[in-house]
Length: 297
Image 1 (cartoon, rainbow, N blue to C red):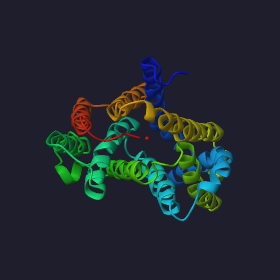
Image 2 (cartoon, rainbow, N blue to C red):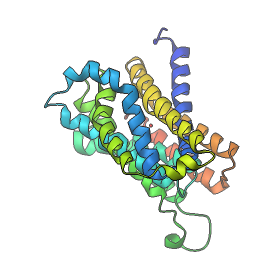
Image 3 (cartoon, helix red, strand yellow):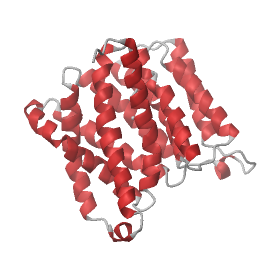
Image 4 (tube, helix red, strand yellow):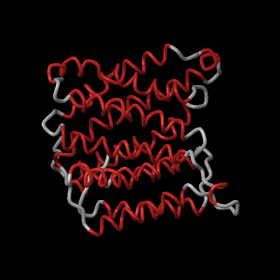
């Protein structure tokens, strides 16, 4: 496969966006029978098992210099967001989660500027402000109860997850740019997988296993781990060297389309105001990406 070929690049970007856009409804399916801690821990632990052969192969690349960064990427950049998303989706729709997740490039740019002295243009700052306004609007229901009575505060869990993804991107970009992408992914999950395995030992699976759809829900969680956390992430890291950062960031705009599509198919309601605020977020993120930033789910 020629990764320099434009149609091939577009096919890969759309495939990655489809996989990450589907992850939100898969989380929702997993939450039918398993609690948020089980879904998050299973997602990371299954990813760790799948990537273990690669981690063993690359273990020699783990050293004192990159251990703290890989530890952060594994636990803070991947594991904690997995729990935050499942917590959020106990109260918000997968469509809303998919839209708010598009704030990741905005946080990536902000962290890059503040901590790593990346350059930012005026248009990027305008984009940050617009995206922030859109996110605030999406968290407020369209009623007359007032802000504090109507705000869906569980959406903040997705915003925090997007912030952590933004930090993750900058660490990979600035601290691990000389490390093979497969080494980065596998070693990060090698450090975060075992703690999630220990967490699973202290959870009660009896209600989920005895449920008529328990095994089906487990299958959806396994799909979430294998396709969203392992396959899509690996493919995305492979294609990045062959495309521009603006092209790479286009995945950010396609993910909400698939997230909304699956949400509507499976009966989630999406109000016109939700769609409107989501469009404002995407306009802001477009301006954020106009000259800077790299996006990743």
